[in-house]
Image 1 (cartoon, rainbow, N blue to C red):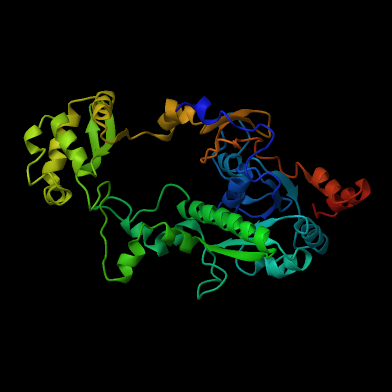
Image 2: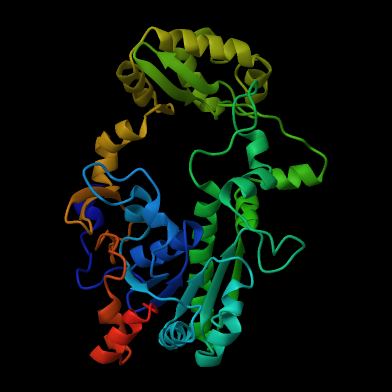
Length: 407
Protein backbone atom coordinates (compact mmCIF):
# COMPACT_ATOMS: atom_id res chain seq x y z
CA UNK A 1 0.00 0.00 0.00
CA UNK A 2 1.25 3.51 -0.75
CA UNK A 3 0.51 6.66 1.24
CA UNK A 4 -2.13 7.98 -1.15
CA UNK A 5 -4.05 4.71 -0.96
CA UNK A 6 -3.97 4.70 2.84
CA UNK A 7 -5.38 8.24 3.00
CA UNK A 8 -7.82 7.88 0.09
CA UNK A 9 -10.88 8.50 2.34
CA UNK A 10 -9.27 11.11 4.59
CA UNK A 11 -11.31 14.07 5.81
CA UNK A 12 -9.82 17.55 5.59
CA UNK A 13 -12.31 19.35 7.84
CA UNK A 14 -11.09 17.94 11.18
CA UNK A 15 -7.77 18.26 13.04
CA UNK A 16 -7.96 14.62 14.19
CA UNK A 17 -10.16 12.03 15.91
CA UNK A 18 -10.38 14.08 19.14
CA UNK A 19 -11.75 17.17 17.39
CA UNK A 20 -14.08 19.03 19.75
CA UNK A 21 -12.44 17.75 22.95
CA UNK A 22 -11.25 20.60 25.19
CA UNK A 23 -8.13 20.15 27.32
CA UNK A 24 -6.79 22.46 30.03
CA UNK A 25 -3.13 21.75 30.76
CA UNK A 26 -1.21 22.94 33.83
CA UNK A 27 2.15 21.22 33.53
CA UNK A 28 5.89 21.62 33.47
CA UNK A 29 8.88 19.91 31.88
CA UNK A 30 7.92 16.61 30.20
CA UNK A 31 5.44 13.95 31.43
CA UNK A 32 2.47 16.33 31.65
CA UNK A 33 3.29 18.22 28.45
CA UNK A 34 3.78 14.86 26.70
CA UNK A 35 0.32 13.71 27.77
CA UNK A 36 -1.26 16.94 26.53
CA UNK A 37 0.65 17.02 23.25
CA UNK A 38 -0.57 13.52 22.43
CA UNK A 39 -4.14 14.74 22.97
CA UNK A 40 -3.39 17.88 20.95
CA UNK A 41 -1.90 15.87 18.10
CA UNK A 42 -5.05 13.74 18.09
CA UNK A 43 -7.07 16.89 17.43
CA UNK A 44 -8.07 18.13 20.88
CA UNK A 45 -8.06 21.85 21.60
CA UNK A 46 -5.40 22.34 24.28
CA UNK A 47 -4.80 25.43 26.41
CA UNK A 48 -1.41 25.26 28.11
CA UNK A 49 -1.32 27.26 31.36
CA UNK A 50 2.11 28.46 32.47
CA UNK A 51 3.43 30.75 35.15
CA UNK A 52 4.03 34.25 33.74
CA UNK A 53 7.78 33.60 33.62
CA UNK A 54 7.27 30.47 31.51
CA UNK A 55 7.74 26.81 32.35
CA UNK A 56 11.06 24.93 32.40
CA UNK A 57 10.79 23.33 28.96
CA UNK A 58 11.14 26.71 27.27
CA UNK A 59 14.61 27.18 28.77
CA UNK A 60 16.20 23.79 28.17
CA UNK A 61 19.14 23.71 25.77
CA UNK A 62 20.12 23.24 23.05
CA UNK A 63 18.15 25.72 21.02
CA UNK A 64 17.15 24.59 17.55
CA UNK A 65 19.99 25.78 15.28
CA UNK A 66 19.35 29.20 13.83
CA UNK A 67 16.40 29.86 16.13
CA UNK A 68 15.65 31.22 19.59
CA UNK A 69 13.48 28.21 20.46
CA UNK A 70 14.34 25.29 22.77
CA UNK A 71 14.24 21.91 21.06
CA UNK A 72 12.16 20.51 23.94
CA UNK A 73 9.59 23.32 23.87
CA UNK A 74 9.26 23.08 20.10
CA UNK A 75 8.70 19.33 20.35
CA UNK A 76 6.29 18.94 23.24
CA UNK A 77 4.23 22.14 23.06
CA UNK A 78 3.22 22.23 19.40
CA UNK A 79 -0.50 22.22 18.56
CA UNK A 80 -1.31 24.11 21.79
CA UNK A 81 -2.35 27.63 22.81
CA UNK A 82 -0.46 29.41 25.60
CA UNK A 83 -2.00 31.25 28.55
CA UNK A 84 0.18 32.71 31.29
CA UNK A 85 -1.50 32.51 34.66
CA UNK A 86 -0.38 32.62 38.29
CA UNK A 87 -2.73 30.05 39.82
CA UNK A 88 -1.33 30.75 43.27
CA UNK A 89 -3.22 34.02 43.34
CA UNK A 90 -7.01 34.21 43.80
CA UNK A 91 -7.63 35.84 40.41
CA UNK A 92 -5.50 33.20 38.69
CA UNK A 93 -7.26 30.39 40.52
CA UNK A 94 -10.66 31.76 39.51
CA UNK A 95 -9.65 32.05 35.85
CA UNK A 96 -8.35 28.47 35.89
CA UNK A 97 -11.62 27.20 37.37
CA UNK A 98 -13.62 29.17 34.82
CA UNK A 99 -11.64 27.54 32.02
CA UNK A 100 -11.92 24.12 33.69
CA UNK A 101 -15.70 24.50 33.78
CA UNK A 102 -15.62 24.63 29.97
CA UNK A 103 -13.15 21.78 29.54
CA UNK A 104 -13.45 18.03 29.13
CA UNK A 105 -9.99 17.13 30.47
CA UNK A 106 -7.55 18.74 32.88
CA UNK A 107 -3.92 17.55 32.79
CA UNK A 108 -1.47 18.42 35.57
CA UNK A 109 1.85 17.00 36.71
CA UNK A 110 2.81 18.89 39.84
CA UNK A 111 3.87 17.19 43.06
CA UNK A 112 0.92 15.49 44.79
CA UNK A 113 -1.10 18.05 46.76
CA UNK A 114 0.22 21.12 44.94
CA UNK A 115 -2.88 21.74 42.85
CA UNK A 116 -5.07 21.26 45.95
CA UNK A 117 -3.00 23.84 47.81
CA UNK A 118 -3.60 26.30 44.99
CA UNK A 119 -7.35 25.67 45.02
CA UNK A 120 -7.41 24.04 41.59
CA UNK A 121 -7.17 20.33 42.53
CA UNK A 122 -9.62 17.64 41.49
CA UNK A 123 -12.21 18.46 44.17
CA UNK A 124 -12.20 22.17 43.32
CA UNK A 125 -12.51 21.52 39.59
CA UNK A 126 -15.17 18.87 40.14
CA UNK A 127 -17.23 21.48 42.01
CA UNK A 128 -17.45 23.58 38.85
CA UNK A 129 -17.44 20.69 36.32
CA UNK A 130 -18.83 17.49 37.89
CA UNK A 131 -18.01 15.30 34.89
CA UNK A 132 -14.42 16.50 34.45
CA UNK A 133 -11.68 14.02 33.58
CA UNK A 134 -8.76 15.15 35.75
CA UNK A 135 -5.40 13.57 34.89
CA UNK A 136 -2.66 13.81 37.53
CA UNK A 137 0.84 12.62 36.59
CA UNK A 138 3.55 12.43 39.25
CA UNK A 139 6.66 10.41 39.92
CA UNK A 140 5.12 8.17 42.57
CA UNK A 141 1.33 8.64 42.34
CA UNK A 142 -1.36 10.28 44.46
CA UNK A 143 -1.08 7.65 47.22
CA UNK A 144 1.48 5.20 48.58
CA UNK A 145 4.42 5.60 50.96
CA UNK A 146 6.42 7.71 48.49
CA UNK A 147 3.62 9.90 47.12
CA UNK A 148 4.95 13.10 48.73
CA UNK A 149 8.45 12.70 47.30
CA UNK A 150 9.58 14.73 44.29
CA UNK A 151 9.79 12.47 41.27
CA UNK A 152 11.94 12.88 38.19
CA UNK A 153 12.62 10.66 35.20
CA UNK A 154 16.06 9.30 36.22
CA UNK A 155 14.72 8.46 39.68
CA UNK A 156 11.89 6.28 38.39
CA UNK A 157 14.18 4.68 35.82
CA UNK A 158 16.39 3.69 38.74
CA UNK A 159 13.65 2.67 41.18
CA UNK A 160 11.74 0.61 38.59
CA UNK A 161 14.67 -1.71 37.87
CA UNK A 162 15.10 -0.43 34.32
CA UNK A 163 18.54 1.08 34.93
CA UNK A 164 19.80 -2.17 36.44
CA UNK A 165 19.30 -4.00 33.12
CA UNK A 166 20.29 -1.20 30.75
CA UNK A 167 23.82 -0.94 29.42
CA UNK A 168 26.72 -3.19 28.59
CA UNK A 169 27.11 -6.42 30.62
CA UNK A 170 30.57 -5.30 31.71
CA UNK A 171 29.58 -1.69 32.36
CA UNK A 172 27.58 0.13 35.02
CA UNK A 173 23.78 0.37 35.17
CA UNK A 174 22.78 3.07 32.67
CA UNK A 175 19.75 5.32 32.29
CA UNK A 176 17.98 5.67 28.95
CA UNK A 177 19.18 8.58 26.78
CA UNK A 178 15.60 9.81 26.43
CA UNK A 179 13.10 10.84 29.13
CA UNK A 180 11.70 7.32 29.11
CA UNK A 181 9.75 7.46 32.39
CA UNK A 182 8.25 10.82 31.45
CA UNK A 183 7.39 9.61 27.96
CA UNK A 184 5.55 6.44 28.96
CA UNK A 185 3.77 8.23 31.82
CA UNK A 186 2.60 10.85 29.35
CA UNK A 187 1.32 8.16 27.00
CA UNK A 188 -0.51 6.38 29.82
CA UNK A 189 -1.93 9.72 30.90
CA UNK A 190 -3.34 10.25 27.40
CA UNK A 191 -4.67 6.69 27.24
CA UNK A 192 -6.25 7.12 30.68
CA UNK A 193 -7.81 10.43 29.66
CA UNK A 194 -9.35 8.96 26.51
CA UNK A 195 -10.66 5.91 28.43
CA UNK A 196 -12.15 8.09 31.17
CA UNK A 197 -13.69 10.36 28.54
CA UNK A 198 -15.32 7.36 26.90
CA UNK A 199 -16.74 6.34 30.29
CA UNK A 200 -18.01 9.89 30.87
CA UNK A 201 -19.72 9.93 27.49
CA UNK A 202 -21.53 6.67 28.33
CA UNK A 203 -22.42 7.38 31.96
CA UNK A 204 -22.01 11.10 32.62
CA UNK A 205 -19.43 10.31 35.33
CA UNK A 206 -16.14 12.14 35.53
CA UNK A 207 -13.15 10.95 37.55
CA UNK A 208 -9.53 11.55 38.49
CA UNK A 209 -6.88 9.56 36.61
CA UNK A 210 -3.75 8.93 38.69
CA UNK A 211 -0.63 8.10 36.66
CA UNK A 212 2.66 7.44 38.45
CA UNK A 213 5.77 7.49 36.31
CA UNK A 214 7.02 4.51 38.32
CA UNK A 215 3.86 2.53 37.53
CA UNK A 216 4.05 3.40 33.85
CA UNK A 217 7.66 2.28 33.56
CA UNK A 218 6.96 -0.93 35.49
CA UNK A 219 4.04 -1.64 33.15
CA UNK A 220 6.32 -1.17 30.14
CA UNK A 221 9.01 -3.46 31.57
CA UNK A 222 7.86 -6.49 29.57
CA UNK A 223 7.10 -8.78 32.49
CA UNK A 224 10.41 -8.32 34.31
CA UNK A 225 8.66 -7.12 37.50
CA UNK A 226 6.79 -10.45 37.61
CA UNK A 227 10.03 -12.38 37.21
CA UNK A 228 11.60 -10.30 39.96
CA UNK A 229 8.68 -10.90 42.31
CA UNK A 230 9.11 -14.64 41.77
CA UNK A 231 12.82 -14.66 42.54
CA UNK A 232 14.22 -14.49 39.03
CA UNK A 233 16.90 -11.81 38.73
CA UNK A 234 17.63 -11.09 35.04
CA UNK A 235 21.09 -9.87 34.14
CA UNK A 236 22.23 -7.17 31.74
CA UNK A 237 22.78 -8.46 28.20
CA UNK A 238 23.56 -5.27 26.31
CA UNK A 239 22.43 -5.73 22.70
CA UNK A 240 21.65 -9.44 23.00
CA UNK A 241 18.49 -11.34 23.98
CA UNK A 242 18.35 -14.17 26.47
CA UNK A 243 15.88 -16.15 24.40
CA UNK A 244 17.37 -15.75 20.92
CA UNK A 245 20.66 -15.94 19.05
CA UNK A 246 22.28 -14.61 17.02
CA UNK A 247 20.83 -11.17 17.75
CA UNK A 248 23.39 -8.45 18.34
CA UNK A 249 25.08 -5.34 17.08
CA UNK A 250 27.63 -6.26 14.42
CA UNK A 251 30.17 -4.18 12.51
CA UNK A 252 30.01 -3.94 8.75
CA UNK A 253 32.79 -2.36 6.67
CA UNK A 254 31.21 1.08 6.96
CA UNK A 255 29.43 0.97 10.31
CA UNK A 256 27.32 -1.13 12.67
CA UNK A 257 24.00 -2.88 12.10
CA UNK A 258 21.55 -4.59 14.42
CA UNK A 259 20.79 -8.00 12.99
CA UNK A 260 19.80 -11.53 13.85
CA UNK A 261 16.97 -14.01 14.01
CA UNK A 262 14.23 -14.84 16.50
CA UNK A 263 12.51 -17.59 14.52
CA UNK A 264 13.87 -21.02 13.61
CA UNK A 265 12.57 -20.56 10.08
CA UNK A 266 14.64 -17.39 9.78
CA UNK A 267 17.73 -19.27 10.89
CA UNK A 268 17.40 -21.66 7.97
CA UNK A 269 17.39 -18.73 5.56
CA UNK A 270 20.19 -16.95 7.41
CA UNK A 271 22.43 -20.03 7.41
CA UNK A 272 22.15 -20.25 3.63
CA UNK A 273 22.56 -16.49 3.19
CA UNK A 274 25.88 -16.40 5.09
CA UNK A 275 27.22 -19.47 3.29
CA UNK A 276 26.61 -22.10 5.96
CA UNK A 277 23.77 -24.22 4.50
CA UNK A 278 24.94 -27.27 6.44
CA UNK A 279 23.93 -25.49 9.69
CA UNK A 280 20.34 -24.86 8.60
CA UNK A 281 19.20 -28.16 10.09
CA UNK A 282 22.11 -28.88 12.40
CA UNK A 283 20.62 -29.82 15.81
CA UNK A 284 23.09 -27.49 17.54
CA UNK A 285 21.74 -24.49 15.61
CA UNK A 286 18.32 -25.33 14.17
CA UNK A 287 16.40 -24.39 17.33
CA UNK A 288 16.44 -21.29 19.52
CA UNK A 289 17.59 -23.42 22.45
CA UNK A 290 20.47 -24.79 20.42
CA UNK A 291 21.53 -21.37 19.17
CA UNK A 292 21.43 -19.73 22.60
CA UNK A 293 23.55 -22.61 23.92
CA UNK A 294 26.00 -21.86 21.10
CA UNK A 295 25.64 -18.09 21.21
CA UNK A 296 29.33 -17.30 20.73
CA UNK A 297 29.57 -19.51 17.66
CA UNK A 298 26.44 -17.95 16.17
CA UNK A 299 27.77 -14.45 16.77
CA UNK A 300 31.11 -15.34 15.24
CA UNK A 301 29.50 -16.77 12.09
CA UNK A 302 27.19 -13.85 11.48
CA UNK A 303 29.71 -11.24 12.60
CA UNK A 304 32.38 -12.63 10.29
CA UNK A 305 30.05 -12.53 7.28
CA UNK A 306 28.86 -8.97 8.01
CA UNK A 307 32.40 -7.66 8.58
CA UNK A 308 33.20 -8.32 4.90
CA UNK A 309 30.25 -6.29 3.59
CA UNK A 310 28.96 -2.75 3.63
CA UNK A 311 25.73 -1.99 5.44
CA UNK A 312 23.91 -1.52 2.15
CA UNK A 313 25.12 -4.89 0.87
CA UNK A 314 24.11 -6.65 4.08
CA UNK A 315 20.68 -5.03 4.16
CA UNK A 316 20.06 -5.91 0.52
CA UNK A 317 21.00 -9.56 1.11
CA UNK A 318 18.91 -9.83 4.27
CA UNK A 319 15.92 -8.11 2.66
CA UNK A 320 15.95 -10.70 -0.12
CA UNK A 321 15.59 -13.43 2.49
CA UNK A 322 13.18 -11.56 4.75
CA UNK A 323 15.71 -11.58 7.60
CA UNK A 324 15.59 -8.75 10.17
CA UNK A 325 18.30 -6.12 9.94
CA UNK A 326 18.64 -2.36 10.45
CA UNK A 327 21.50 0.11 10.37
CA UNK A 328 22.55 1.61 13.69
CA UNK A 329 21.72 5.20 12.82
CA UNK A 330 22.48 8.40 14.59
CA UNK A 331 19.45 10.64 15.02
CA UNK A 332 20.85 12.75 12.17
CA UNK A 333 20.95 9.67 9.93
CA UNK A 334 17.45 8.63 11.00
CA UNK A 335 16.19 12.12 10.16
CA UNK A 336 17.50 11.72 6.59
CA UNK A 337 16.01 8.26 6.13
CA UNK A 338 13.57 8.14 3.18
CA UNK A 339 11.18 5.92 5.15
CA UNK A 340 11.09 8.36 8.06
CA UNK A 341 10.33 11.16 5.61
CA UNK A 342 7.60 9.21 3.84
CA UNK A 343 5.95 8.53 7.20
CA UNK A 344 5.80 12.31 7.90
CA UNK A 345 7.80 11.92 11.09
CA UNK A 346 9.52 15.25 10.46
CA UNK A 347 7.18 18.05 9.46
CA UNK A 348 8.35 21.56 8.45
CA UNK A 349 6.75 23.86 11.02
CA UNK A 350 6.83 27.62 11.58
CA UNK A 351 8.16 28.44 15.05
CA UNK A 352 7.32 31.37 17.29
CA UNK A 353 10.33 33.35 16.02
CA UNK A 354 9.24 32.90 12.40
CA UNK A 355 11.85 30.28 11.52
CA UNK A 356 11.01 26.86 10.07
CA UNK A 357 12.11 23.62 11.73
CA UNK A 358 11.42 19.91 11.08
CA UNK A 359 9.29 19.01 14.11
CA UNK A 360 8.68 15.36 15.03
CA UNK A 361 5.24 14.34 13.78
CA UNK A 362 2.51 12.21 15.42
CA UNK A 363 3.16 8.46 15.49
CA UNK A 364 -0.32 7.00 14.97
CA UNK A 365 -1.69 7.37 11.46
CA UNK A 366 -5.47 7.71 10.88
CA UNK A 367 -6.83 6.98 7.43
CA UNK A 368 -10.09 8.93 7.99
CA UNK A 369 -9.00 11.68 10.40
CA UNK A 370 -5.32 12.36 9.68
CA UNK A 371 -3.24 14.18 12.26
CA UNK A 372 -0.31 16.56 11.78
CA UNK A 373 1.70 19.32 13.42
CA UNK A 374 -0.83 22.08 12.83
CA UNK A 375 0.95 24.89 14.69
CA UNK A 376 4.36 25.35 16.23
CA UNK A 377 4.85 25.65 19.97
CA UNK A 378 3.40 29.04 21.00
CA UNK A 379 5.25 32.05 22.32
CA UNK A 380 4.80 32.58 26.04
CA UNK A 381 1.34 34.05 26.62
CA UNK A 382 0.70 34.26 22.88
CA UNK A 383 -2.99 33.51 23.30
CA UNK A 384 -3.71 35.38 26.54
CA UNK A 385 -6.07 37.92 25.02
CA UNK A 386 -7.72 35.38 22.74
CA UNK A 387 -8.47 32.94 25.57
CA UNK A 388 -9.52 35.57 28.11
CA UNK A 389 -11.89 37.15 25.59
CA UNK A 390 -13.48 33.73 25.11
CA UNK A 391 -14.42 33.61 28.80
CA UNK A 392 -15.71 37.18 28.95
CA UNK A 393 -12.82 39.41 30.05
CA UNK A 394 -12.92 42.99 28.80
CA UNK A 395 -9.93 44.94 27.53
CA UNK A 396 -9.69 46.82 30.82
CA UNK A 397 -9.90 43.60 32.85
CA UNK A 398 -7.21 41.95 30.77
CA UNK A 399 -4.93 44.97 31.16
CA UNK A 400 -5.42 44.90 34.94
CA UNK A 401 -4.55 41.19 35.11
CA UNK A 402 -1.35 41.79 33.17
CA UNK A 403 -0.31 44.82 35.19
CA UNK A 404 -0.89 42.99 38.47
CA UNK A 405 1.22 40.00 37.34
CA UNK A 406 -1.64 37.45 37.28
CA UNK A 407 -1.12 36.83 33.54
